Image (cartoon, rainbow over all chains, first blue to last red):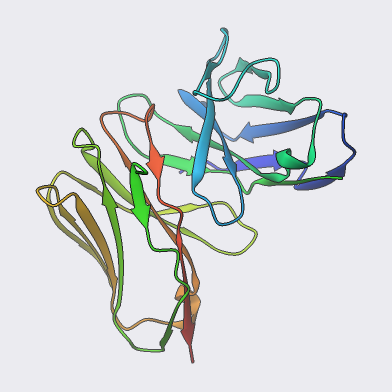
Length: 114
Length: 111
C-alpha cells in the first residue's frame, strides 16, 4: 500500500485564522479524500480531491470553508478557513484507486482552535 | 437513524479471549465491507475487507457479513495486548465515493 504523510501533524490555531494541511503520497494514486474525525464520532468525508479540477464536496461542507487543491496525482492540500473552536478535530487524508473499494489513510492532523 | 451503527464500547477483555465486534447498517446498496484498526494518535489501518455476504479469515481475524440482516462482524481469536485499538467498520456501494464509517469500538486487551 502507498505511504502517506501529512503536515503538520498537529497545530493549535486562533479563532478566525486559516490552516493549510498537506497530504503527500509516495506513488501516483487515482483518488484522494479528506475526512474529519471528531472525538467519539465516525469519520466524516469532507470532499474528494480531483486532480486538475474542483473538489467534490459532501453535504454540509463548502468550498469557501474547506478549499482543496490537488495539483498532481501525489499531492493535495486542505485549508480550514476562518476557524472556530468547532473546527477542532483530526483531519485525515486517504487515497484509493478508481474501481476498487480500499482506502489507505495518512496519520492525520490534530487541530485545536482556541 | 445513522447509516452505520457501531457500539463505541469501551470493550475490555483478558488476553486470549475471543472478541466480537459488530456493526449494523441501513443502506442495502452497500456491497463492500471493511474493518479498520486505529491505534491512538495514528490514522486508520485497513485490516480486512469482504465483498457481499460470507466469511473471510486472515490469521486470527475473521470478518463476517450477513446482508440479509444488514449486520457485519469482526472476530478476533486469541486476542493479544497489541490488539488494543479502536476498530472501525466501513462500507461502500461500488467504489470509494460513498464510503461510510461506524463510530469505532475501543478495545482493550489486558495481559
